[in-house]
Length: 397
Ligand SMILES: [Zn+2]
Image (cartoon, rainbow, N blue to C red; front, top):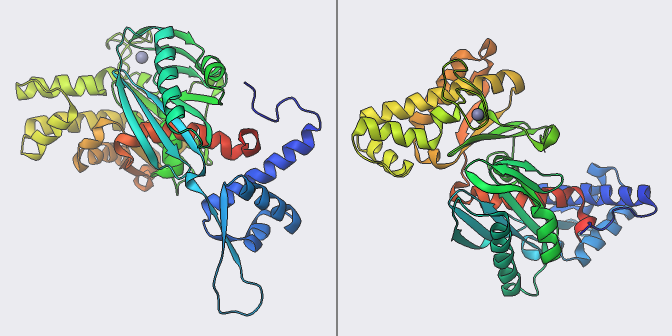
């Protein structure tokens, strides 16, 4: 399914209209309660153009306007707001052991969330069918509501432009899965897909720690380690739709462990969740099943385990120095299960960056945990659609 506005005559005029609508909509979202006069002033659009766009967006129910009660004489100013519950997105977060589904509104509020278990043996057809059935039942349940589209976040190599999951490590039977094409055909809604770290970076940009930062890096530490890079308030996609694969930076390319990517010594083989669990289990002489249990023991004074986690933080810090020297982001936001570790994990990362970054400018870079918690994936998948919608609102309406 093509979005409206593709391959039409009068393209330039259409593009201009789309661009102006996008600028106005973004401004109303960012400066909630802004007056029409301020929209005119800040966008440099003419008052009739702003007026036309505002009424069009109001007709669609996307924004609402209230008259502010002021004591001043003359015309009362109008305040404009984005109407969060006016449109929903279906979020699909694919993970190694489960798929999360969510209904999320334009304010990033999760209206409904559900979880299905899956297995690593799942095939292309099974995965598409599972997503299709669940989305269909959600669409039926919310019949009468407006949906912008379906946002999918997935680990692995994703061609987000064409909407294809190229491959996912550990999902051996998933390859070249045309998620966008297949789901759009079945569900008749726009479908957008992104790599999980990229989706989470967008989630942070709109609803998390990235709201105030023009340039930041989201580092997701899970079974793999990946980064989403936002530069000048835009997600950096890279060529071939692949970027931010920081988990495959080698920390020992001579004698290191062999990675699925074909190289040796990739950092995710040493600092990923699996490795943390293995190393902590070994020093504590017990079998941990997740990071929450490890965090609990550290809180209760297990110094040996704490040292393993701090060592992991230092490894992460070593790899982040390259990112800091290369991009000089304002913030580094860390997400994934490691968020359950406390300050000591962040400090271990931060100390390395402070000590070793070029000219020590790393001292000015904030390193912090994502606050979106367990919702980071669902909100991230929503923002894959939301980001595209804010750029080209008319194509979705
Ligand atoms: Zn690798």
